[in-house]
Structures are given as C-alpha cells and as structure tokens.
Image (cartoon, helix red, strand yellow):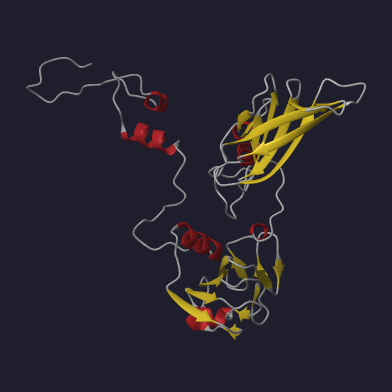
Length: 312
C-alpha cells in the first residue's frame, strides 16, 4: 500500500510471510524477511557431525580386517617349509606352504608382525598339520578358540591378528562340517567321478529313471559303469532264438544267468535243456530242447527262457 508514482521516495508495505508460511511453502504473495528465514531454519534439526572425505578416517581393528578381506588382499610372497618352524615378522602377508604332514607352524607374535597383519597357511600334505600362536595369544574361529588349530589336508587358512589374538577367516565349521537344515550345493555333471559333493539330483540321475528300463526286457545302469540286463522270451517255434540285449554293452559281458519257465508237467516226465551260444555285447543265441518220457530229443515250443546278463 502507499500508492503514487515512484518519481520520489515512497514507503511500500507488503504482507510479511510467517514461519508457518515459510515452512509450508504454498503462498507466493508474501515477502520473506530475515527474521522469518532464520526462524524457519532454526526449526530444522542441526547438523551434529560432518563426514570428511578429504582426510583419512580412523577404523577399528575389526573394521580394518574386514576392509582387507572385502578388497581381496592376498599374500605378498610364498615361503615353503618341510619341517616345523616358528615364524617372525618377515612372514607378514606371506603364504606359508608345506607338503609335510604332522608339522607345527608357529605364528609370529603381534609385536613382531604388527597389528592387522595376516599369515596364510596352505597344507598340501596328505594329512593334517597344526598351527599354533606364541605367548598369550590364542587362535579364534567362528566355533573355536584355543592355543592350537588343526589344518586338514588341502586346506588354506588365513590367520589375521586383531592386536591381541589370531583370527582365521575360515571358520572351523568348514574344516569339519556338521550341517543342519537343508544346505544346497551345485549339481555336478552326470558322468562326474571326483571328490565333489553329490546332491540328491546327482544321485537320482545316476541311479534313477534315466539310467534304467523296467520293462519285461530291460536294463539297469549302475554308478561306475556296471550294467545289468534281462530278457524274457517264449519259444513259439522249433527255431533257435537270436536274442538282442535291450541296450548294447559298451565293452564286455561278464556273466550270464538263465532259466526255463514252463506251464507245468504234473507227471514230471519232461526235461528241458537250454543252450546259449555266440555271446556278444549285442546279444546271444538261445536253443531249447526237451525230452519227454525218455524219448527222443525234440525242439521245444512251450518254454519261456529268462536270461540275465551282467557287463559294462
């Protein structure tokens, strides 16, 4: 308000925004004053700490250990031994390698190696070795705390000190597993024959429906390559039967077991004889003959032959 032209000094009065107006920010017809701005800012929570990115930050020992593990800090050198040995500060950051079972590798003292340093130990022997600390230090894992730790054959452990004790990044549960619940693992290829873990899916493939046929003439493939096959055939003529295995044996046939099934002869006056000939990995020839009442030998037309073959 005030009116008039602006050729001379004038006093113009406008509505003043309150603290509430500033906080809500919905009225654009009122003027801001230094008082209303200060009041609005004063209602906000003040900064209580500043994170600096231009200077080094102080971490705890545990944080420093975790940081090294997160960035994958690895050994800076390799030292091999075939006998028990006591390490000193020169072992900091090194991989200690041995192929000799039963030896004891003694870790440096914290004073020798420095806080947050690590030593890696690889046991390439056929059985366990031991790792021990010096002085009053102990070795800790997720499930173990003591003065000595057994390292099984093939294990790689990283020992890191926290300023007082040694901590291994491989918990004891990985050295001697005792799983609970329903742990999972990758399913290996069906033909895998190694020390890898076998899942239930691997076992089902190895011995399940994909490796068998439970028909009258069928087969079963067993882990390791052994194959069991069976044939059942009725003779309806006097000719020999050229029988073919349900699947060909890849290598050889070890053994045959056979028998003859008839409809029965109450007088028990008929004798049946079975001859197997020309055995191959693909099949066999079966010949059945019978003798009735001590008479002549004739070809049989009423016998069922059952043959089991084992091979690989």
